[in-house]
Image (cartoon, rainbow, N blue to C red; front, side, top):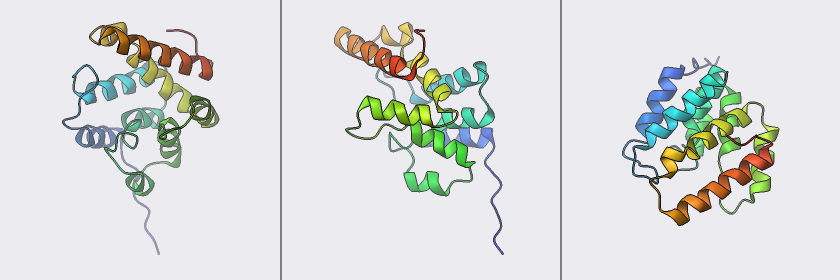
Length: 153
């Protein structure tokens, strides 16, 4: 007889994400966990479910190597959370069209990516970057929003 693990609570997922990304910084040199918190809050304020909020906390964990794919596969998380995390995980060399198609095909993932894009494109965050980086990222975020059918922020 197998016993099923109790799913991780949202607070436990947050603590795991914070620990996994400890010491990492974003392009502006800010603690990376500030980005995760902003995306999770963006999901919450957009009416996202606890599963979508959990996915927001973990949205970059596999892509950034903070947690392994094997960890995610074995984690005591609903399959929907795992699916959303994997949907928003960019794969090396993957065309944006394939990436965004996967997000669109995964229930709940668009809201997570929308909150991620909103924080990434925040003018205050972008203002501390050099002009070429700021322009490159602004264009990239606009392209992803367009492919996902999201209105400009």
